[in-house]
Image (cartoon, rainbow, N blue to C red; front, side, top):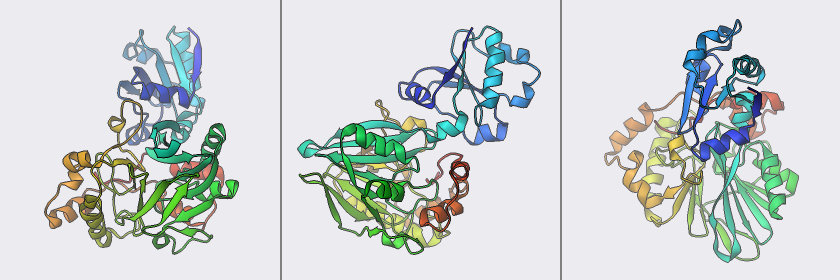
Length: 375
């Protein structure tokens, strides 16, 4: 059998299309248990590379013979060697090109829907990290919301669509991934917007994103309306796009709610979080489709690979929106927090412009799963 390379994009298609795949992950067990490729119909076997240096004979009975096997490691090298050994044993095997680092960075654009007056809304799904970014386009103009540091994905997509990026927004100061918003604005001459309450320590110029601010994209009115919604951070700001979509940042997810502790302010901000979720959001139309800045688990993906759900449905089904007692809400939110994101303090400082790590260091800082939600 021959050995093939599988790109992160090809693997992403298997996730979105809900295809079967057998993943042999040869990273250390701790790394595998902390963070792995997720697919609804994926099967997994974790055998550290060092256990396979002398050969793969001892694991052959654990591997399928009628199914494609994908060997995964951190950066690619170890998986190539294991895949070669398996190929020599006659198995149909691929290795993940670029390893988990490439998987962490891949983003899959998915069209969410058409807007009034000829506009379109796209979601960029970062399957390996759980990040969700957005682009609103209309009549030759575009706005980008919550961009990742892989800025070329957005600039190239805009070029493909024949649109010019005029505005770039961050819903809040991110702590789990490095924002590409400011860089995209610099590259395109667009306006970079940031909530001022999150920008107290930033070292760069920005346009203050205030409650009630309205930005029009294109010649006609595809409006992005800012809605102050603190709780995850003190400046967190949601957007209502075209009276149809609620971009909730890290305040509200499909199956959870935002954590209030990434600036060390959990006890102070939990009240803001409740006010946003139980009062500000309650006053909005339940027909709005909630589009968050992250997803937690692969089950949250819709059939087309997008992540989104009507606000009314979330009020019915999201546990975080159905805790009537305020004391109980405070307890649930402050006692059910997952480990904090890898290098989150350094990521916040990078997003403030206080430090400027090299590209490879930024990559390392982001390794690991999304941890923006209350469990």
